[in-house]
Length: 570
Image (cartoon, rainbow, N blue to C red):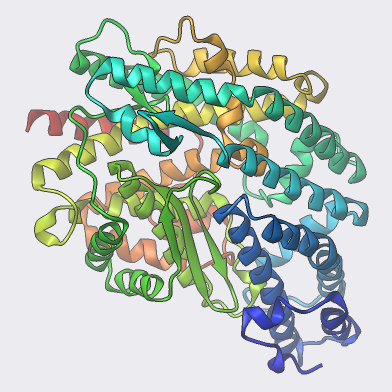
C-alpha cells in the first residue's frame, strides 16, 4: 500500500468505508519489521492512525457543538460501530506485532511501556462496550445541553444564567440559583437512569479483562503508570489537612466582604467559587475575547501568539454558548492537519478569560507535541496535559493589563489575580470530592448502582471537604451535585489530574515570580516532549515536582496565601 497517497482532506477520508481502510492495516500487519524498516513502518502506521483519530475528533466535536443534530449523531454512532471499533482491533494487533518483535526504536521507551499495559487489558469483546459507553456519554450531553429556563420573559441556557449569578442583589442571585437548580432537578430521574446503564457496562469491561473492579481496569486504560489509587487517597488526605482550612479562610473572608451571616450557594459561582463584588467587567464580544487573548499570548511567548492567530484565521475556535451545545470546555486535536480546536461556552464573564487561557494552554501543547513524528509518542498523560493548561492561566497573569493589549486596568488585573488564587484554594477540596466519590463508586459498585447511595456519599464528602458554605434546607440540590460533574459520566476518574496538575502549575508560577522568561522557556520545552518521558520527568522539565504529599502541597498553599495577603495590603 502507498501510504503517502492517503488523502489529506478530511472530507474525503471521512467518506471512506472500512473496506477502504482495512487494506492499509492489513499491509502493516503483513510487513516483516526490522531495524532497517521500522521507522518507515511507524510512519505508515501513524499516517493511517492519524486519519482515524482526526475523523473521531471531528465527529465528536460536531455532536458537542450541536447535540440536537440527529444526522450528525447518526454519523457519529455509525463511525463508532463501523470504523472506530474495527480500527481499534486492528491497532491492537499492530501494537502486539511491535511488542513481539523485540524492537525498541529510539524515543519509544515510554510508548512501548504503555503498549504493554494496553495489551494486558485489551479484550476484543470490550470494543462494542466501549462504543456503547461513548453513545451513553452523548446521551448525557443531550440531556444537559437541552436544559434552559425562562428568565424575565426570555429563554436562557443555564450557562447564560451564570451572568445573573454575578448580580450584586443577593435576592436576585437566590431567585436565579433556585430557578437553575429546579431545572436541573427535573432531570434527576433521567440522569439516574443513565447512571444505571453506565455502571454495569463499566463493570463488564473489568470483568471481561479479568480484573477485580473497574477502577483497576480504568487505571490501565488511562495508562496511569507513575502513581496508584493509594497516592490519590493520600492526596485527598493531604488536601483535607492542608487546603480545607485555607479554603475555609477564603470563604470566611468572602462572607465578611458580603456582610452576610452565613454563605449560601448563591453567594458563589458554580457552588464553590467566591464571586467578586462588584463583578469584574467582561470583555465585550467574542471577537474581543479572541483579540485580547491573542495579545496576551504574544507577550507570554511569540510562538504562542502565532499559534493562537493561526487558530483564529483557520476557524479553530467555537467559543460562544448557545442552546443545544454540550456543556463545558475542551481542546481537541486534528493530527493530520496538525491543529488543535477549542470548544467552550463563553457568556461574557471574567471566568471566560480564565477558560480561554486554560484551553489555549492545551492548544499550545498540541501544537508542540504534534511535531513529534509518530502518533505513539504524542500520548501525554492527562496529569501533565493539565499542567500545560493550568500553568498558562498563571503565566499569562502579568499581561492581562490593557496597557499591554490585555483585558484590564492594573487594579482590575490584581482583582483577577486574587480571584484566580482563591479559585485554586477552593478548587482543591472540590477536586477531592469528585475524586473520592469515584473511588468509592467503583470499589462499591453494587451499592453505587443505587442513585440514593450515591447521593448520600456525595453529601458526606461535600460536608467533609467544603464545610465553609451553608446548604441547610437544600439537601436535594447539594446531594445531586454528582449529576452536574460531566467527567463522572463522560470520562470517569478524569479529575485528580486537575488537582495534581494544579500543584505542578503553582510550582511553575513560583518559578515565574522569580524569572518569568526562564519559567516560560522551561514550560515550553516540557510541552514538546509529548509522551516520550515519564510524568516525573515531564514535571521536572517544567521546573516542578510530581507530588501528592502534604509537604509539597503546604508549600504551594503558603505561597498562595502570602500572595493574597500582599494583594490585600495594596
